[in-house]
Image (tube, rainbow, N blue to C red; front, side, top):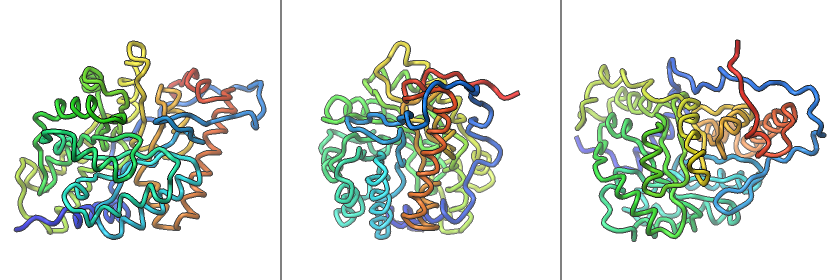
Length: 357
């Protein structure tokens, strides 16, 4: 059977994340196990709380990014335009989905370039998979993808689990680290390395730091299971064969909950900041409210991110609903800051979290 076009696969991914339950089945991100110690005497007014921060050289109202999600098919133009409009209004960062399709077909450029058109002043980063990076001979194609959206940074996503389970996947990662090192050395903008929901460990983060990466999105387990997404695609019967060991739904299902919980990955990676204070860490994977954002910052993250929750809110109620959701998260974050006596994000990073009894 001929594999589906990349564009149709991307659309199918988005539809499944919106319409089906693709959460982890038993594993959680871990935020729920921790809590702040209440400060009954915060010695500041709520109006003093300032959650602004800097990311990729630009000021944000909140330490938050709508994470890499989509692009490369017709309806992605609308989705990315609306997400960018919201990010521009709320002064948030945004990452586009994988630009592999734009690298191969110019007719899909618009689904990515629209982001910068409607959001000229926010930090925006591009995105390509590590399997593609492993094959690069030079950075010319990535430069063109970055120029397409006037990117402030460029993300390489690590998704070996998804590629292993995807019927038409490309689980060929030999040379990926060398490719990442080439991008770090030759691109004029920062390189971000991110997982997509299975987490980045301490050892992998060390290897990334060794080749010059300074921004890591841990993207841990507990939010969207991309293994689950691929299992559901198989169940629809659109693909009959796979190149990998995850050939049957039975064996594939064993990997639905595979990965490092977000808090565990976050604590491991942030431990490197003592020796590498220049490291910027993004926490994503099951971040579900503003208090989770606050907890991520207290664990050492510089930013937090979410994708599926934002997309579902947008598709259910449009930009008005998404703006309301982000405003609610902002109030929750500022509330957590006020109730811990944290006027700034720097103050919040100094707060201690305790395990719930």
